[in-house]
Image (spheres, one colour):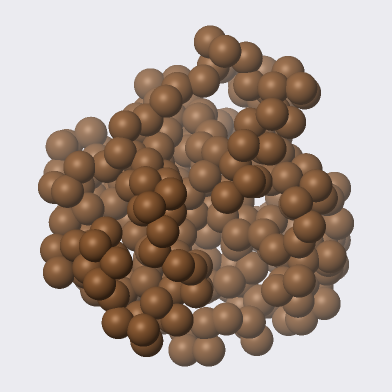
Length: 282
């Protein structure tokens, strides 16, 4: 829980989060959640009535602060997507809970914020087609499953092949990467793929999961990117979107390490976004 406060403070200290740039979301209303999640599931979570097995699958206790944070994080991703459509790029200080399925959570994920945001924007007619680019080290399995039969949402996941989840889903494009992959080979793997997919699909919005668990020091990662490699990955994705005039909303995704290095890694996508916004005149 502390990393969100520390990330905000670090961005403030770095000049990347001036007061006029900050927007405070409202918790997601039930009608938004139910575009993706079953009522029986979200009510059971909110009332601390999940079975012991369901709680173990999530891996987090259903405390009141967690319940509040979970609803707020989903509202934040929807707000970030709206701000991206208005301004070209926007970054959320949370989000990226891509292992949450309609009827259950998994892998520290309770609600699928990017899936909810996509469904909200589609339902409102704000966009007609969008893309989810998921570069967390773990496959965006629930996101892929949720949109398996939704042609308006194109899902892309580049992840460590041997890592969680054991049972993978089918994204529209899956890039399964070998253990130990380092900066050069990783960037080569996505360097043509992302721009080519953007040209082929021409989405009206990209939701980008910038998980930092591909870092070589991440406890759950199995890939070997450096901090510079993560920064260049984020620059590549943001540049590919913005040079095509495609708005992009980022979420922080996963990361597992001591708080100080973890927060520094999560700040990289904000640094990349600030740089690319300047370069593209946003």
